[in-house]
Amino acid sequence: MNYNIDTLCVQGGYVPGNGDPVQLPITQSTTFRYTSAEDMGKLFDLEASGYFYSRLQNPTNDLVAEKICKLEGGTAAMLTASGQAATFYSVFNIAECGDHVVSCSAIYGGSYNLFANTMRKMGIEFTFVAPECSDEELEAAFRPNTKAVFGETISNPALVILDIERFAKAAHAHGVPLILDNTFATPINCRPFEWGADIVTHSTTKYMDGHAGALGGAIVDSGNFDWMAHADKFPGLTTADPSYHGIIYAEKFGKEGAFITKCTSQLMRDFGSIQAPQNAYYLNLGLESLHVRMRRHCENAQAVAEFLSSNDMVSWVSYCGLPGDRYYERARKYMPNGSCGVVSFGVKGGRKAAEVFMSNLKLAMLETHVADSRTSCLHPASTTHRQMNDEELIAAGVQPDQVRFSCGIESADDIIADIRQALEAAKGA
Ligand SMILES: *Cc1c(COP(=O)(O)O)cnc(C)c1O
Figure 1 (cartoon, rainbow, N blue to C red):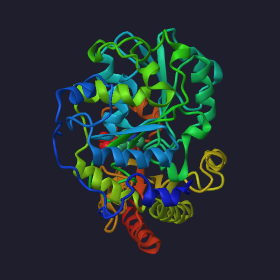
Figure 2 (figure 1 turned 30 degrees about the vertical axis):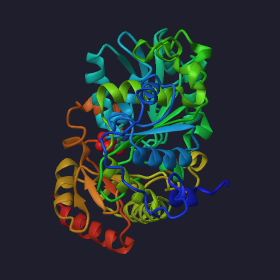
Figure 3 (figure 1 turned 180 degrees about the horizontal axis):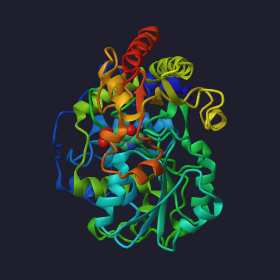
Figure 4 (figure 1 turned 180 degrees about the vertical axis):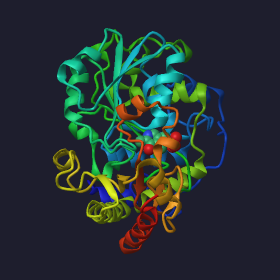
């Protein structure tokens, strides 16, 4: 049956059979028994699919990954221990020492650190391009050794809506895939594969889990990118893997399965950033209500953004649901039913006033987290993005006076009343 996305949130992935438990079983086992060495040997050669050690794969995780795969409309997916692991694996699966990646500069601070510092030490170079760069600038960012283009559908915390089709076109013109982090929009509001993205990543820690309960990440493959057509660029997928008896992933698993199979059997085997099956269970519980919660997050954010834009203590508001916002039209194209629950704004009086405002909030919690059922609030310049200098901050679309306000699913009236009294308190600060 071809279910709607709302039904897939509830019933995708695990389907209980006759007499089976209705709720997803947690396979709390590190390893799996086989009765013949031959059967087990086939698993190690990737000749048969099955489980042997939970550092690589676990049945609970795979059922939740299957649900996320269906939500995104992909062909294969895997869970990782965190969003950071998903970002790292998605790039490192196709780029190695001596390679180069083009990344949009408006991305999560953790991804920026990973790319600009840690992966650079591994010998992978990144060129950061502004989301609204000219065609010439985008073109000039590519090199012969470029292996991927990376971006975020809605950037955290700048709330830039990426022109997905434009970045996909540029990537494909250079024979490389577009990898998009779809954490903030979730597949409920945006399905990047429909606009040309090839690989999607998630920090499931955010809306997907939705309750600040479990860290996690996911990678989904659209199955659309033809690795063999660009065989010289992706030797890891198109030539023999000596660690699996000479398997060629793109030949054996095709466009649909090569990327995730390699990522699981090499990177998960060697780095082991697997999600605990217990966390996968919590994630699945969150996914069951993702469609309902996303609607409420967006309604509340719209109400908060409208309130803020008419308040004289607020210097600017960024929310793509506001007519006149610079991303209003683009959001209507890529995410017509809503974007996310996060609103950014500046408090008049700059950094100091923003701090007084934050300290006076009662319902909204000060925390680094974002995108869960509780309303929360953060000052990026002094926390998630503090490793950046002012120039890098502005390039990432973050203002020094910026407050990132993540609307939860409480009553919009209560959230607004809280903001109103905290803004009053910040007057004259
Ligand atoms: C939080 C976040 C990440 C990192 O995810 P973790 O689960 O914290 O490792 C990556 N991308 C975006 C957009 C995020 O918001």
